[in-house]
Length: 171
Image 1 (cartoon, rainbow, N blue to C red):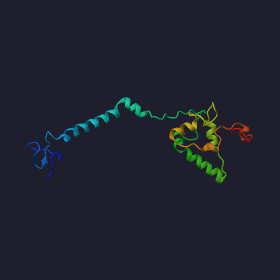
Image 2 (cartoon, one colour):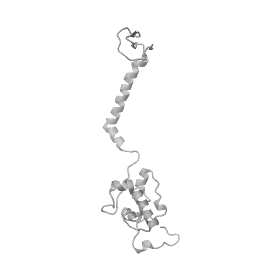
Image 3 (tube, helix red, strand yellow):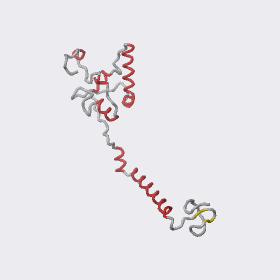
Image 4 (cartoon, one colour):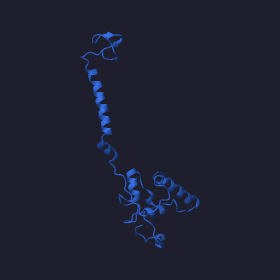
């Protein structure tokens, strides 16, 4: 037998009495009286917040600012921008493996070629500043940038670029 206020149905009879197998909530049933309207208010509030123009603009803006990278060298990159955003590390690893294991040296996907095109005009580097090409994206994605623990983050220039720096000199 059902208890008062636990089943939903349409019944003809006096409140609180069983009629046609359903229980009719009485006016003293406080739980049933506020659950429906509260659920409706919550659903409407959620829908309003997600469609309000001010809130939609806030959702588009993140707490973490998008990286603003400036490309110093004009022209087209070796690959499409979206492809490079997703796959540059795989290209660099593949190039590294071919260079180290097979002795094949090309410039298309080399780290040195990337640095030569993307180094800042002001600093000549791809790291060292919040808006530096590599560092800004890696900060945004919260990815450790460890390429330059061994490799130069500055573009090589002329014959002096291949020379060994004196002891104690910055690389």
